[in-house]
Image (cartoon, helix red, strand yellow):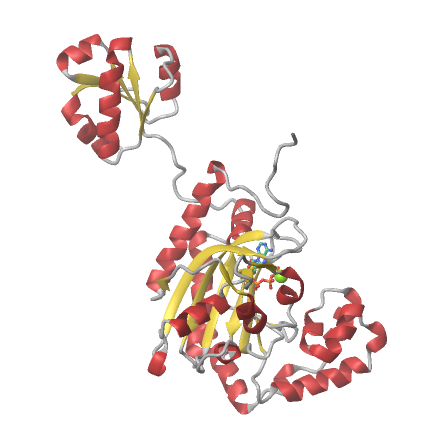
Length: 418
Ligand code: ATP
Ligand code: MG
């Protein structure tokens, strides 16, 4: 029988990598705490409608990337492709933003998209996500952008670029949309098949097309800044002023769009110079109309999601550190067969004291045990003499010193030297 492998686009995170993941998530949780965001856990599957309405029918995600299936009860279920819609659903369902209250929430976990797998692009990937709900003013946008940048600063990422845009609101975007339709219609011949289709349904997304021909035409497209209403213009000016106050540099990119009716005002991305084609490490923006799109009361929001897998790739590329690599501090070795019991007890006592300790459980020779101890900071050896004295020979592998320590004091002795 053929061996069963993991599905295409998924990968196993093995011990050599998992501690680096844990470091990134721990760092994220500290930054979130410092910015006043609180952690939530959400289901990884939701009703399909949440995403078709919450992410939008005309997005790549909903059109071709969702893992959707009918469950045994006949309901259409989708593995979450992103977190924002679920967070908003959660806030509405649990009344977190009732009577004008606000909620700053973060979460992390797997997302699922049926994409063409390649470096930095998987079908199951992990996102760290932060959403600021119930706050309509520009300072919330600035907080979210600052939060994502602070996360990357603490992780030691370099060579990043912040790209921002405003996509307007339900008042000014229709005007802009009309201008775009007229412009692109005049350049039909240069557009790809997909963009011709977008022309009727969602012309903003043509701006985002990665194809060369469309890109060249999009460069000359009308500028959204000229169409923004006073409110959106002022909001964007405040966001920019806020970023400048915090001394963040950014690039304006009129082609950065979310391309959906419920995304409003600020859109941003953080790009890495060290990722090749999959260069976005985080993306986010404002979505003041999302809550009504999924059937709730009006709750404004702004947030971002960062791709943990990609952040890790960049960190490796740039030689960033991940805190201390996991390792065993103490190896407890038995000089003779009769000492194995005492070794087991000491190992357990050290572990209870919060010191990582290992001993042989495979019946290996003393020589093999000593070899294994070579990878640890301390070696504790118990033989007939030590048993007699209720002690262990504790060798500090760093400075080579060795002392006989009573078993009852071994943990304390090691703790002080660690
Ligand atoms: P891209 O332009 O790379 O397709 P996106 O606009 O679809 O990204 P978002 O929906 O904004 O991405 O998701 C936020 C972040 O999640 C991205 O910036 C990226 O770091 C990460 N991400 C998105 N899709 C994938 C994927 N298939 N595999 C790994 N990471 C991903
Ligand atoms: Mg994508």
